Image (cartoon, rainbow, N blue to C red; front, side):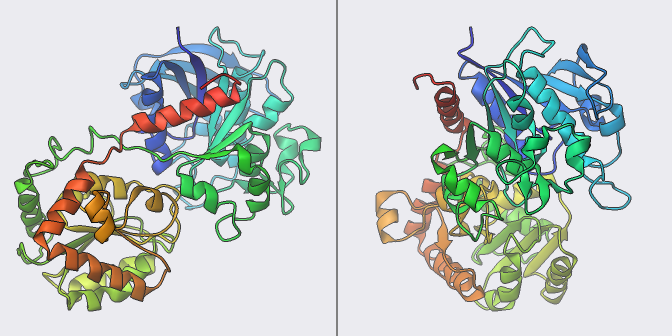
Amino acid sequence: MSEIKVLFVTSEIAPLIKTGGLADVSGALPPALRALNIDVRVLVPGYPQVMKQMGPAEVVATFPDFPGFPASRLIFSIMKSGVPLLVLDCPALYRRDGGPYMDPVTGHDWTDNPIRFGLLSKIASVLGSDESPLSWHPDLVHGNDWQTGLTGVYLSVATGAVPNIITIHNLAFQGNFRPKKVELLNLPPESFNVNGIELYGNMSFLKAGLYYAYHITTVSPNYAREIQGDELGFGLQGLLRSRSSDITGILNGIDTDEWNPETDPYLSDHFSAGRMAGKAQNKQALQSRMGLEVNSDVPLLGVVSRLTHQKGLDLLLEIAPRLLELPVQLVILGSGEASMQKIARDLAQENPGKIAAMIGFDEGLSHQIEAGIDLFVMPSRFEPCGLNQFYSQRYGTPPIVHNTGGLADSVVDCNADTLREGTASGFVFSGMTADNLFATIQRAIEVYRDERKWKALRKNCMTKDFTWETSARAYREVYLKVLGRTV
């Protein structure tokens, strides 16, 4: 019999529906928890992509009459990972073209997002209370990001409610709406105040989640500290500081089967920490594919990212001409702000054979870049956790990162001491300036030129443990703490 039963609530889950890191966590953490004998079931909206891809299914509950919400039903299925799935089927809210949050025609958020994710929260609270029509009852409800933020509010007035926790994947996205929506969502009227869901005159889903949760987790220990400060608190730092003892930062893991240089189907040659020859072959293959000069001696830098201000890539684009004089090559894969896309394209056109840029996304190419480059550049201004720095290290590619969030927790700066201790795994800089980034890339290239140091650094990267098991054990500790059981 399972030690703990958890309802895991999310607005997206890989591989069924994905816009970002939340989907990766939702797809990977529940199986890792189940491996620890925790009975996790995932509640997710029934978007067309989910309905189309789920396996054999059966309707297990209907909800015709919650005030303020259209009729919905609950469909049970099982994912390929073995995780039981509870799909919230409400055609009026979820059966739409495009992604989970935005109207593909206008490019704006759906105007009824408060109702869409209010219903997700409402059903989560029903399943976590005496109202549940299911024979399976969770011990705890685990919500994720603002889309599940009202769960705790609804649980606060439900009979037989179980405890709830919420995980912040990115505090910048808060789900803030006009206060009129409170009436539409049938929330307790007393919840709309500063000690509740009100944030600067608006209703905030995320603030509700943080205020009503028994415990709060974030996706890295350093980010848990940063969000309690003014710079990265996004208006919620006061509440977070007041709940400091209830916040736990847990670093994400990665799918080490999908990201495995020994078996990766996208690679021309496979390699491992003990057999690195294939790494050089992948570099050559990447240079050929991207129209770069095939040269094993020149350091090849790479980026796989959204091209946005948050990711700090404006600094990299600014120093690109100086970098070419070192010399280096640069390959960029990503899309985002139009101005950055244009600069990346222009740099590639002006420097053929030295800079390559593909605007868009290509899963196979992202793997080939991680395997073929020498250094991965990730100068994010803030980064709750990040994933590519994990992929890079796994592929023997030391990352160059800004000292923030999960980047600071997962990359150990390379210096004489950390190399000697065997912990060095990349290059870390503080202070978001173009000069600091340039100096750190220069420092990385000096190590690249020292064959003994470079070999040791790459081996360190490839032998680090980034599996989800470590993260799952930390979540288990949080669950037990919230439930008042011994760890």
